[in-house]
Image (cartoon, rainbow, N blue to C red):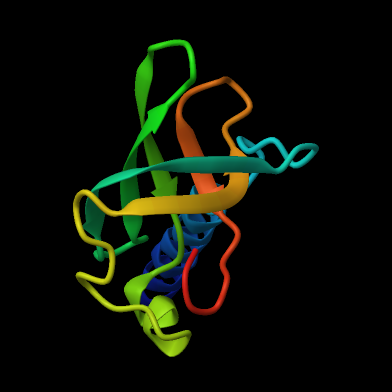
Length: 117
C-alpha cells in the first residue's frame, strides 16, 4: 500500500512538472505573423539562465525612446553557436530581428543568426 502511494505521488509530481515546463516554453505570446526588426543601443546583455537577454534602447522615431528586452536561448545553446558573455557592450549599436509580443509590450524573441544578432 505504501509503495502504491509513493508511486502515485511521484507520478503526479512528474505530470505537474511536465505541464509547468511546457507552459513556460509556449511561444503563443509572440506575433508569428510579422517579423520585427529593431535597431538600438545596447543597455546591457544578461548572459544568464534560463535565457540570455539583450536590453536595447530604441528610438521610435517620434522622439520617444523605448527599452526593449530581446530574449534568446539558454547560455549553453548560445555558446554552441559562438556567443559569449560580454560580447555586446553597453553603447554598441545593434540590429536584431525576431517576433514581438502580440500585446504590444516591448519584448521580443530573437531569431538567431550565427555571428551577430
